[in-house]
Image 1 (cartoon, rainbow, N blue to C red):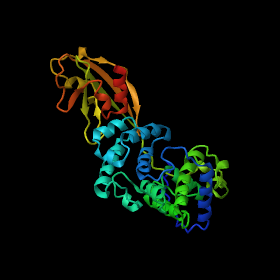
Image 2: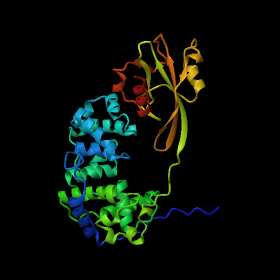
Image 3: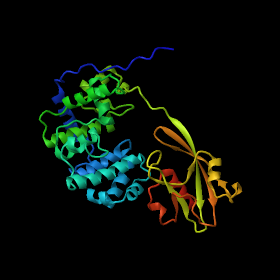
Image 4: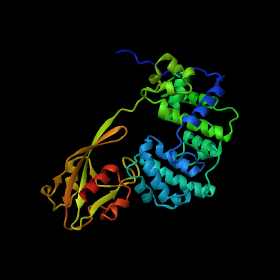
Length: 363
């Protein structure tokens, strides 16, 4: 077996003499070719920018559009979001995934109101003190809304910059990622005005999303192609370099779809940690025998009917879900941690996407 090469550390990076030229190219390109039709663009409202940044984390624009509109309709200002219950927020977020984002978003709104009087702080440093706002998200809000000269480094921007400068160091190393942050800061427009910072920041995002894509980048449409190290080498898809990847796993869950004589369904709130944390869910079990054991003693296995199993794909795990139907005439409590919900009540709960789909198919 061949020896595994150690992670390559980033070499010291000198000041990039053509940084101003690169920034000017990006700004010009953004103003003539960048995206401007998205509902969170062309605004300096930090609430809208923040909302979009949180939703867009590991989620496609096409998916976010409808959620963004629904959130603004229900919570038009940060104070409205802060005043909502967590269940209301999770219900509106249901299906978007990564539910910790919604819980952090709710906490963040409450802190903006409590600590800052309902006004988002104006610097990236202060923004990072809020729940769920990391360095890149804070920088995006500060750059777009307040014109702060600060670098972002989301997935799209990492791809653009590592290709442009030929950054071969492995981003699985935190030291190498810090080096890339330093480079991103060196490449900022010098003495940028607020409009320039907005255009440059948006331009990097747009380049990564529409031109400098992970597969088959359109180098012919890139304003920086003439100076791009990866393009010159003919291997842009090799960047960025990141060797440490999470392995996919699989798990099986048996889900009890219990209904009473009135057609209500039994749902339980999940624990505060783990899969679907804090959401309402059908009772889940590791196997069918455990599900059967959870039923009241006088009920028999013959009362159960198995629906077709299906796979629900999470980021790093495949969930093999086995719905098991059961109807009881009694309407008694099944466990201490749940309740019966009718068809008018359960749609307003925060539900995992596969559970919501199952319940919709029942009605």
